[in-house]
Length: 210
Image 1 (cartoon, rainbow, N blue to C red):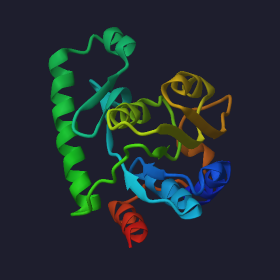
Image 2 (image 1 turned 90 degrees about the vertical axis):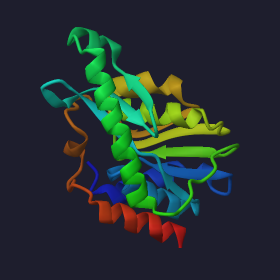
Image 3 (image 1 turned 180 degrees about the horizontal axis):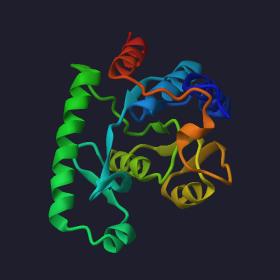
Image 4 (image 1 turned 90 degrees about the horizontal axis):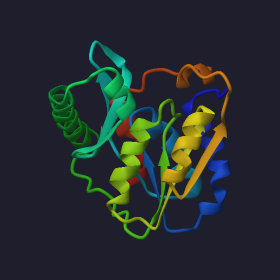
């Protein structure tokens, strides 16, 4: 169990200490991942940026992710689930369009006029507060790969072992502090797991940019 996101971030930073004094960029996945990532960035004295992802929910069940979108249209789909649920191409295209519009809105909200950090030739630490299916993280990774970083490291406090096994080949390194056998949701492994607000994300980004 982790006390809350900030303390989980400090625990995660201890496992990432080897990246101190390297050409590192810490990238948080909003909203909860930014709280964890800010602690890692503070501990490593590294710049903090974010990459915004949006889940694509199944028809009639928004909580069931059939995929995710990152940036301005990097789409990752669970093809087996899409086929099993007979999800139409029109449905997916509509959800992707809405997701991209929301991603653009949130980036303006969170970063304002702050430019995106150049990831080229950097070691990029992609941080979230935990993984469930991992599709949002995978969409973020695929988008980052097009920007040609030197190395992509995915780091999270908690995730199911099958998700870790599936995502490990997709990155240069994967760091996960806890892989519980019985996994239902990320929040079950935190004593306190409130809904992070937009204001909290903005405050953390501004604090590191100052």
